[in-house]
Length: 154
Image (cartoon, rainbow, N blue to C red):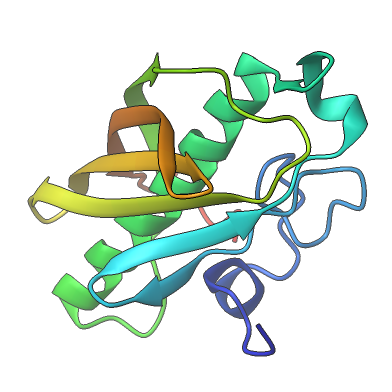
């Protein structure tokens, strides 16, 4: 996509390993709002594998953590009518690995907010390869306040 991702638009200097556009060694997830959900396409490289042909579970967790965090931040921004998203952090998340995730094929992450209030959101997500769900995640993400180390990191 030629349009900027949520990360590129709102946090171009972010160096997060999973989603930071400014981290040349990171995963550089690019999340986009599409049809009421937040979607990211990402293709692993050989060094992301747990063993030949299968993506590492920790990388899967990072993909979910960052992508869902951006789904929550975008949702809270829109809900508040703000011009930029709040800095959000992960309060908790879980990952269910349903089947081996291919270690070299294109993947699609889909996330949607299922519940929210003024400063937190619950997000459910899937990780798919070739239209088949390989993993699912549920997480709770919270907007931080001044004094928190992540405040204004974007």
